[in-house]
Image (cartoon, rainbow, N blue to C red; front, side, top):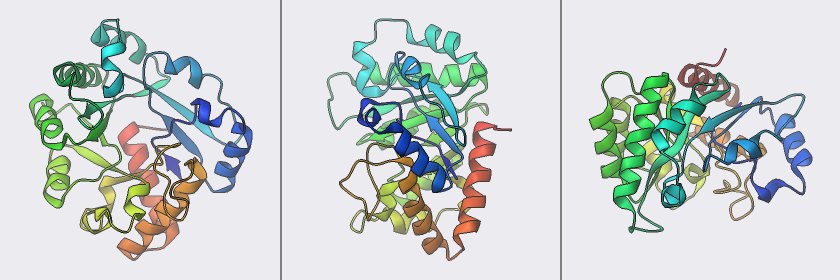
Length: 253
């Protein structure tokens, strides 16, 4: 399985990282993709190594961090993203939950990330919280046939999900799909399986039965089991489909 979104490099894992990675490998995780929070995230990612897991890096500025960035985001994204070691641009997006003080700066940053992704021919990884319509409007504005990416931690409505697919996005399915009262499971069940990728967003949003605990890549098996239940297919088939989707989206060899 491929965890397409994990902040495994954060300090929450510093005390037991080797054990966390061993559990991930034992659970069948072969690849972990690491979205950036800011440009300093790349240095933190450099410390990760495991004999049975491949680590893939992204570069970007999280929408909650846009006001603390002093560099020219667009130019820096191009400079860092040109490296073959960078598989995607992000995470970027919009977040109106924590603060609405910097909405215009967030929108500007999102557009710069989309433009960099198109220039570099790499996918964009999208964060969305309480901002769905604005987010999709900007993606529609930026979509010229070259933009591809993923709506990370998908939790939208049926109509929003279909609009995202029409705009060329994949849907990142994480622990929220296992939450009983979220309703995300019912929406996901109507989406084509070849549009879905698995993720954890570790250390956040652990799935049931680990909800409320620190999330980690090995817990992605619970999300995969939920997808198998929703689509009435085997766990092996869920693994095969979502792995192929991730390889196609991120153009992994």
